[in-house]
Length: 519
Image (tube, rainbow, N blue to C red; front, side, top):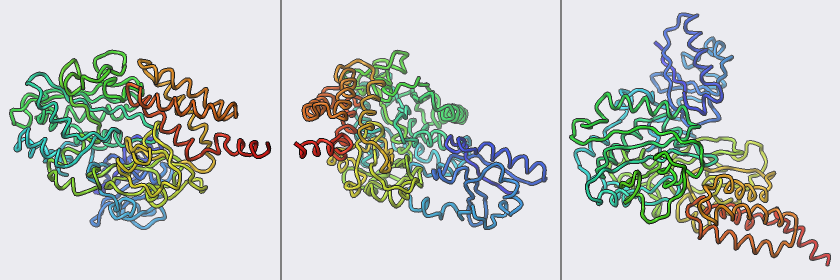
């Protein structure tokens, strides 16, 4: 029997993976081939999707991208015997783009069948939970603190401190909430985990529940992720049936269960307190802090809210130890970061590596430069409200503090590349427009500031009283940054001011200088 692997990840499905799989099934039936097709997550090399991997004694040999119309010819040319071909990339584990990564959080994604609990366990799954049960709540939190794990959703708050805060609250109903409302442009790591290794998220949330005394959890997933929702629900059912969820988790005496909740597409519900309102069935609006969710969270109870990547990393920390994880990275940014490379880039995809790699290495070497072949002009890191970095900042290491020092944000790890045809004034305008559309409307700086910001930027571009409006824009950005209730309004100034600082010529600066010289 020959076994081949084809991704069922949304990114692969979008470019025809389902048709490729069905064509292989048809060819196998018509030719009488003994063929098993295993549907996996994606390896993250999206320019090669649909990627077909053939199992051999030397490892899985990859071919891609494969079109459904090519399947018959590929079989004729020996793909099932892993013969050489122009679309062959060799053994996938040895392919440089993949081999050079440090895959910890994404260790199984693209390798295992995400719907198979047996496959998950065969590749180290639930080893972390076993050690967590043996260690007990206090030791779990100590390991997470030792690891240096920080929130991967954007704020970078130490995960262990958040867990300790909830654990120290008096015994009562507590909750674990996973923020899977992945809405930033150029980000897809959460979706890849949920579709490609859902059991690791369930395991991480279960460990969190044991650590802080929470007996129930919710995964809040945006409705635009139907494949993620389907995969998570199937995995939750399988975990519950196997005794890894319920009143006696893995025979430990600890109780923990969970469910999936669908969001309705509001970007602001990626903010933790808005998310809690949405889970409770209310309109998603930002809550004032304090009280913090760790004290008064979901349904008024102490609540852990962590991002998908944070929770999915916990099992490896518990299995290998906090010190093991801490040994990767730099400064206060410990461990690895799944970086998502997108935009005008030759090799876009998911690249997990230790903190410290430079922005230039990510864009020029790993990403291969622009797909258009034109020069890179700007890179936005951290979603639609992240700063725009010019090439002069490409030596900035991928590190929370290094990016903050350069007036930028790592955020969720999304990197979006633009070539020299981009209009940075329009990008700045888009940031304010995005904020205005997505604002929950609760606070004035965000609700009114974003609308006024669009007007002021339009005046600057039109060279209407430019100097005065530049001053107004800077003052407006400071007000939004310091006065907004949440990061939606608070971060909108980052793309605006970075575009203005690094690309002033797009805002009429050269035109203004020429007019001044003429006078």
